[in-house]
Length: 358
Image (cartoon, rainbow, N blue to C red; front, side, top):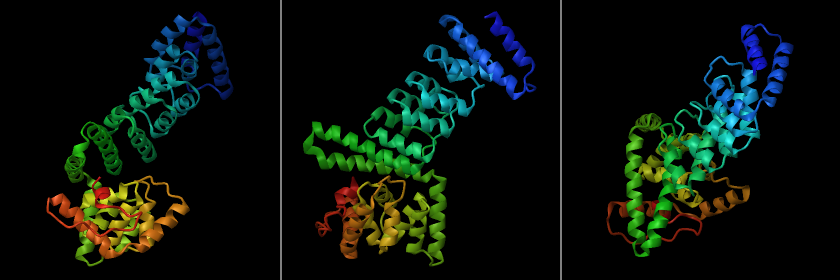
């Protein structure tokens, strides 16, 4: 303990002036001394070091990579001396206890959360999902939403985040609503249609409020309105937006061209069933090239193979414009509460009005 204290003081006194070889020597000495200190003392030292902003990073790392979670956790959770690369190295190699400690840090960068979500068990993922100081990449949000499909508590944590992109939020709502419907219908199978309609209405109400507050949606809506005024809005706007993964622009443009509600276009783009977006795109008289870009948008995470795309193309070519527009009309009438005749039967892989409303 005395040796460790004195060497730490020596390191701090020469901070910024040590050569690479000297730093490497300090690192080895720190690791050697930490390894021979008894467990209870290591735990106390780790708790103390975690609160010191200018603690020697080499010493902090020696504690952070301790196999005992009780020793590593304090510095992993709090120490400012650990870099992102230190934390990624720890998260990539150590156990769930170490990952959980990292997930509790005040701030977490995207590169760290990606590893935590990839390797973390539910306890770790829940902790990082509700950490307000954590940052997530688009791919990490996609993975969180996917995992939330079977985890209602995780869905709640992810859905309450202020930084979740709107297309992921909509996807989460769709997943969560399916879970809610399954539970209610299991207990009351006679209310299948009523439950589905009620849940869809709630989702649309929530989405409407979120849409109004979305600056990205406002920009997309303004751009489409300008293009309409200039008589320049056409299929190419949908194609380019889908190809550049611009969810807001693609949804608004598709909605206008297909003459359907915006929530219908959004749900079509996000629905895993490729037939749903094909119906809306056909109603907008889009070519297969544009439909393909819509099907490949990351927002839906369909991960379609070449064979899947080939099958979708055949179905799209068989689908008639009037059939698609009839389905859209049926959907709108159903949502408005009007009585209408059943729509014509679409090709087998195309979406039914029930799929559009689900």
